[in-house]
Amino acid sequence: MRYLEQQEKTRTLPLWREAFPEDSEEFLEYYYTEKTADNRILAEEEEGRIVSMLHRNPYPVWAGSHRWNSDYVVAVATARDRRGRGLMRRLLGSALADMFQEGMEFCFLMPADRRLYEPFGFAYVYDQPHLALTPEAERRLRRCVADDRTLPAAAAYMEEWLQNRREVRTVRDEAYVRRLAEELESENGCLEILLEPEKDGNAGFLAGRIAGVRGIQGRKQRFLLCGEENCEEAKPAAPAIMARIVCLERFLKAVRLKEESRLPGLAVRLTVTDPVCAGNQGTFLWELDKETSRITRIPDGEGPGSGQEIPRLEVQIGALTGWLFGYGEAPAAEPWIQEIRVLQGVFLDEEV
Image (cartoon, rainbow, N blue to C red):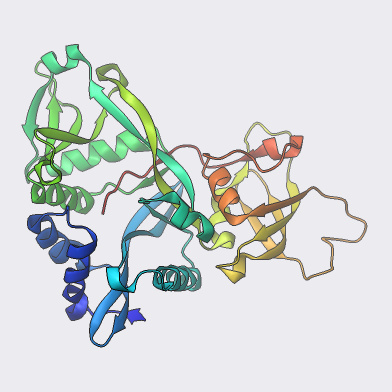
């Protein structure tokens, strides 16, 4: 098991075609030209053949005011004749251990089956919305395809739109949007800009794609970013993205006390169960103020201070992940836990 060299990455193509037959050759050409230029592929090799793989696709992300580098885990696959031997478990465990050593705050993925990833500490953090333009907006707004001239404005609009609505999101810079446009084109789609016919400016951006390669005729909307007055819910949002805290010490810098809290600070005896990332496992003194928080490991059998009585919290890493991303329930009912400000709003809609 090892990370492939750049020139070796195309050796995973046969396994990709076997595991994901719905993907078109046009998409694979895009992926293996563009996405593998800066990703890492951890693979298991037997007798010169790649039998299992996991791709770590890097994304810069915002978590509140913190800009971090995160991995989107994709293309986790094992050859049919090698399944049931624990290869996926080995790859995922090794990748998470590497991420921890690198100091990565969290990683995320889109699960084919959540039950495969929950034992590794992943938890849902994002529901994919299904929005549509209102009938009035469909009549009023004009669509045009984004091009080199308009892509910078598209990136600026998307970044501002998300900044005003979500704390956890991938960075929408010009490089991101150019890649997104190329990805959509590889699936016979495009990035569309919605224009107000009577105004000088953009109403929003709609990304759509032809999904005939998956047996669906017509256009399939990938996402819709526009003013709330121009869209409506087409159907209820559905769980889509799971995440996992990797380096707990670094992640907790984005968690703090609520601004309206009357507490000047809070100390918690935090016990975390994390069988994959051993550095997260154990008991810590978790200290929070209104700017940030930090943890200090408490040696076994010791307390946080002589005669000091503080709240205690015992939690699995998956439950802690869901709560701190603002998705899951708080793992305790005590009043003090309501003083903690977790991350507010997640938008992680990437597919590759």
